[in-house]
Amino acid sequence: MDRRRGLSLRLKLTLSYAGFLLLAGALLMVLLWVLLVRSFPDRAPGPPRRPPGLLAVGGPAAATAVAFLLFFGLLGGWVLAGRMLAPLNRITDAARRASDGSLSHRIRMDGPDDEFHELADVLDTMLERLESQVTEQQRFAANASHELRTPLAISQTLLDVARKDPTWDRDELIERLHVVNTRAIDLTEALLLLSRSDRRSFTREPVDLSLVAEEAAETLLPLAERRGIKLGVAGEAARVTGSAELVLRMVTNLVQNAIVHNLPAGGTVTVHTGPDEDASVVRVENTGPPLPPDLVPTLTEPFHRGTKRTRTGEHAGVGLGLAIVASIVRAHDGTLELAARPEGGLVATVRLPR
Image 1 (tube, rainbow, N blue to C red):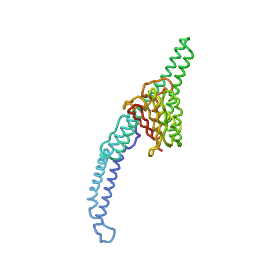
Image 2 (image 1 turned 120 degrees about the horizontal axis):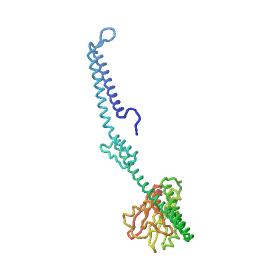
Image 3 (image 1 turned 90 degrees about the vertical axis):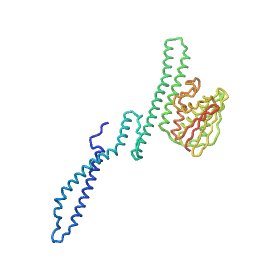
Image 4 (image 1 turned 90 degrees about the horizontal axis):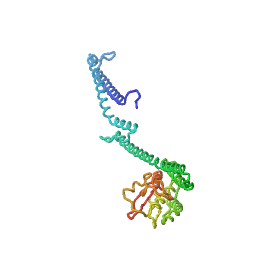
């Protein structure tokens, strides 16, 4: 990026230093002149007389001193300004690299803890967050493109097979296309919801987590019964301020995830709500297969599934359940904690400001 023509900051500081030094020297010489004039008493009538030969002797010396001050001010100001602005040049270089798309560069300013050091640390933190977000967005876009392309490719394959084979059962084709289309719609809606929660474009209102938990459990009770899962809700009122729709989706996703990722039969899902100091808590705990400790932190990543990559049947999922939960929690300035149970299963704890 080309800079507009004009004096550089270093040159401006140099001229300022030199001008200030020159002005100080000139004032000092004027003061000395006044003191010298007053030191010679003038007793004769008429205007005061100047000291004999003072101007002739002091004039060249004063001019030489002024020239020395000007030269010394310019040279010293240029060196001092360069040393003072050296950290700013490093910061500018890092900002220029970032504007060109390189977010991996860090300033890592050393030296005294001054304003430039603080500015460099802030810029390093900003670059680190930007790099993390850009990397996450790129990975998310690639995964979303892959997930959306899969149902479209399946639909195209089904239509090509049906066109080449007129004897293929039409009802079976419609049923398969319906399943694939439903999955594509669910994925699109999940992506839109995830984008909405990330933008925080929602209206805040009072919400009771205990009522939300009961509504989510009532909705998913048929699914739990079909899978032989015992679903229970307990706890106290836990009030927060946020989007009732998003909070309901958050709890629903947690409960649905706990039902789907459970034992084949005889499993349990427990939902507990209540206040905890300055936060309101909803905790969803389920039985299930043991989870490796290194797998738990990755469960909130988009399109990451804790068991098999794909599942069939009702509530097959698109790999965005816990990612949506994490996004909604962040949008409400809360925290999400996932912990594997020693005997198997998962404990998901959401804390939202009261």
